[in-house]
Image (cartoon, rainbow, N blue to C red; front, side, top):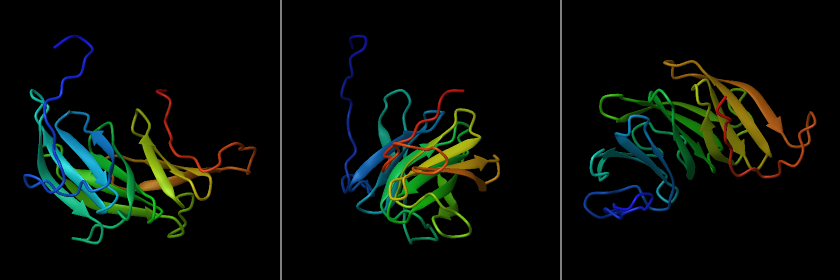
Length: 192
């Protein structure tokens, strides 16, 4: 292969070869160790986990988590997914649930267990109305979620290896000098 050029090596497709949960796939995240790929399917309300061969790059389905199945909540129209830098957690922002779902990740296998849900208007949580993106600070200490309905960025403090987050700040358009943040669609954290 020529340097800098991508070479097609294969694909996985919903309802082919045992693959499921990819209808309306809108976001992907690779684990820090490169062993797993996580995909959210907005049409099936799913989070699909793949094993990734680091030599070939090929994917093999491991498991599918679906909203309302097996105790999983917060996956109604998932739109964004991110893996923590330490590989311990996977976070999913879901638009119609106005939520951030938290999954614990098995470092050996990459499999997930649903452990927590933060939902707008529940338990003092706000700023997630229309949640549409999620990112995490490089050091893994903060999780940021945009809410396009309320024009917000919600900031959660993370205390790994705990599965719990604490809402520490919500920045909202029109308040405390925040301007020009109408219906934010994405969020990124600076490296520092």
